[in-house]
Image (cartoon, rainbow, N blue to C red; front, side, top):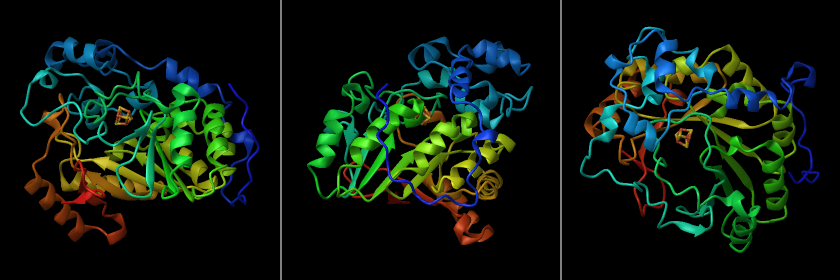
Length: 348
Ligand code: SF4
């Protein structure tokens, strides 16, 4: 690893944690390695019968199961319809060929600006930092993305930094993936030290599911890095159901807020996971209780293997209208879809 260059410090907030309360840095990497990768082991641990679960070895071979043990502990034993289990279990329905579902639903390929850099919208460049994730979500819109050729970390960030530096209209960099927090913190610091030399950057955004699925990732080293960044940071987590939050996730969110970042949640509307007013309202209320504002509720991106998760637009709209009627405005996420060629996320 290349050591991080020193960066200017932002003021500490009252919520800033003390190093003594934080897990040591390598802890999350050990938990990462201990993730469950065998669908039968996952089901057995929940007291479920593999034959009845409709699991598919072919689906698991094309997009392997991966789920941290701490996330499994939040699933309900004996419940095949558990909303967390449904997000990670490879099933035969993924093998169906459904018209309209392709390999690149959101036009990532057409929007490539440089190796590992995607630009779809004015002012923002998305950096595909890595292809790795702590959890493999079955509905993932990048499950077919060619990560082997297209990650910005591959050449020590050179092409990405050069492309962003050459375009003064870009004022926000989005760290995405895969999950950017899959990378060790010194690797992230190496990137941000290089980006810090680009005067036209004003904001950093981080998209990560790790604080939810592996909250131990939010360790002292990560917080130190975040606190020292020279830009305001929007940190967009990804949770689809209230049951994804527990005391450890709450504590991770408090640590992140202590590092001075703005926490937002984006969710995907998923059949069998959160396709009810109760589930969506519960998600908004639970995420706000953890200090996270609801941001986006995405309509599913239509990639191969995910059709069984789709909720039709008319149903999505009526669910959203019911949320508006039930919740305070700040608890209602924007219902959007990503459409290739649009200048921003399209409201439904
Ligand atoms: S964490 Fe995000 S990028 Fe990774 S599999 Fe899940 S949805 Fe896809």
